[in-house]
Length: 405
Ligand code: NAD
Image: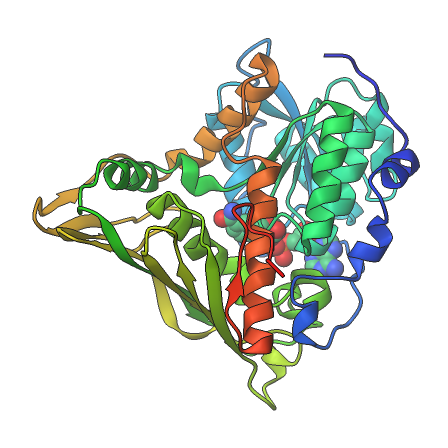
């Protein structure tokens, strides 16, 4: 594959008015208040266990990946498991906090000249030890770092949600095509044994014809404010629980039904006087109607007792995944005809599965199971959910999830 880095500026020019899209989030239509999004270099989170000896690279054709953003998910979930991926190793780190960068870089054996600040990240274009980046920053920065990475000639694995708006997602996809580099959205459940088995069971009609789907993703957040926690800050996170936790339910409804909704009706709630919800919604609920006549009901909340459920009711039985989409601990059963429990594998393998899939796609030029187009589709659906909640009307959708009319 030719290495043809473009300047960041030419990318942004080529991909249209990104600056304009940065101020237009999925939830902006809902008229939420917002404080501005600014990159921060936060200290090492408490409870992080760094490796006592740096992990070893396993294969000659291992993909070198730069981790952008050293927060909780990167440090506690992803980086310790990169060693479990056969064909990937950490080759660079990007952080806004020099002390953290040094501490984490030393522990993971990342050379000092492969540790970048946010500002000098673009220099990575000249670093041939790194072929790809993994963007693990708050959502507001996903599009910008993705464009900068493509401008530097790198492949991109980007955390969910893909971006704050469908316009940003479109710019990211266009940049990937121009750079001839891969763009993958980190939808780990597509590599998680229980959810993969559930997809297969639904394709094989294990509960008959699908009629009703229910998903619930919620937890009750402690006291916080948009200034203290980026997930409660609209400029950094969008509308709140839907983009973050509820996205798992939206994804599940699509991959379990195997259909795209033809219409959506939704409602949202933003309590007054609660410092947690001055900028985001406390909960969002949506009803998706599929061409087959099946209906999915999704609910997500940052202010109710914990739930992580996917349930598919068919003509012959019901599939229940509860918990459905965690890092571990999944439980799955079918009730009714063909009743049984399932233990298809260890959910912990989803992380290495996702990373190997990305590395293989780069090295073998194979297709990506969760590409940018899937992330764009989901952000369009989130925009439709907010549009329906705002107007109180059912929103009709085209097959590519664009709103009709
Ligand atoms: P976090 O708050 O723990 O870490 C965020 C990181 O971004 C920190 O290193 C921080 O220094 C940096 N940062 C830069 N500017 C910031 C700002 N203005 N405010 C706050 N932090 C800033 O977040 P996290 O839980 O690690 O989430 C990071 C990304 O990973 C998000 O996109 C999130 O949706 C995603 N995530 C995915 C999963 C999953 O299961 N796939 C789970 C958790 C998080």
